[in-house]
Image (cartoon, rainbow, N blue to C red; front, side):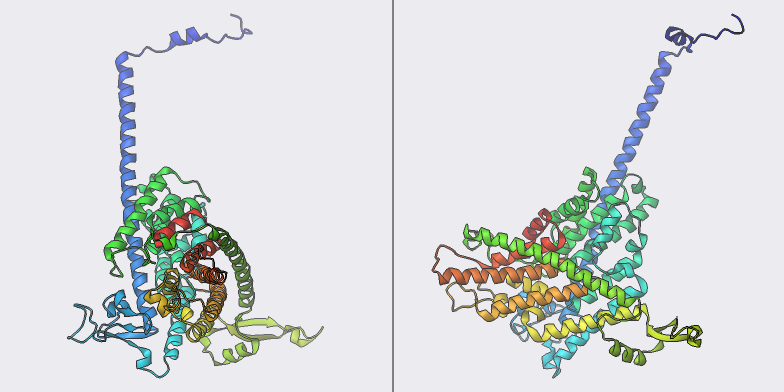
Length: 570
């Protein structure tokens, strides 16, 4: 071969013949080692999945324990605004009277003056509930002062230690599932401040709920456990953080509503729209959600040994709850109203948030006139104020152009506390002196609106009329009261959501929808009797439940999971 000739590439047969020969035993050894390595990998993955399942169960239990802590403090603080338990320190009204069935909802006292909580009394003292009317001549001042004080403390804690703990936290949860990293929203201080602040705000009677924040709390616990498990059991190598966050969200829904199936569907519908969830994530969410429900049932907070919050006295298979053809159009009308109210709330809340942010940039409160705020600045201590430098421009060449003046304005923390205190003052003053629908806790009112007549709770709220043939009260005063209370709750919720307070929208939206639904049911019942439509047996309590679901769907933009949650709630 000459120097200029290009060497030819060996053929496939030649390349095969040039390979070194390997024995059959060597090939078998390599295959055995590969199979063994694959088995070891699968075994490690299976062990990690079992550990992830155990992590989900622990996460559900911890979320439920946190929810129990919040609920117990909410009950005590909420009842403390109306009275105290003599003979039982830190006891709420239900425990003081020996159970919910021993509470007289009309008078707010125990049904028996000598009611005792078995084994809970100290030194043989009789345990009894004493309203503030029996102690002070101005019980309204105690109620309003407690609401303002609780809200101010909650705003101070959040503004000082964990600002991301404000609001419901669901947008932060969706962002985390979508892949955005924001560790401050799921830190230990955020978890602590969210739990304590939520108990103060809900117990203070503000127009917020604890259901949305419970979802945020569950995801906070999920992040903390995931980081710890990554160091100890290596679960983080198999289960990504966004799937563990879905487990925490499902456990939070199960804790808040006592709805384990609704918790899993919430993760699918609300979080699955942000990021696709695997079958493994659904299995883990199922385990965490039911673990939370088992802990709640085992604790048995209200003594009924049931998870349903709005346990109805009328059975589900009762003929009074059977829908009729004439109701379909009215149910569709309620759905339209729910969507309109949800869209209107977003608009009003955006206006309030924009106004709050604009005024806060200059150190002013959006709820106080300028003159009132200037007078307030003169009386506040220096720790609540800050100094701001500015340059005055009175004219060209003026010496004032170079003169720096110091103006006092509210510090950011003081501004948040003032904002929460003013909203609490407005809410408490209006609720206490207006109507029992606003004075009583929202959950109790919603329960009464869902109930058919006659019931004790319905009688306490003037929703039942024993003299009427159908048993429901249908007076014009009741209709006006339901409409006005729903609108006032709308305004209160719109200005509260966005303040430096933990706030959820589930319970306020259920309240508005239940009130408007009950109103429409009463009007339909009135018209049916006016036109002598004996075939149309309208039940206002059913309309209240449909209205609650429609408004909640308008607020949350969810459908299937909300229907399942309502089934588990009632």
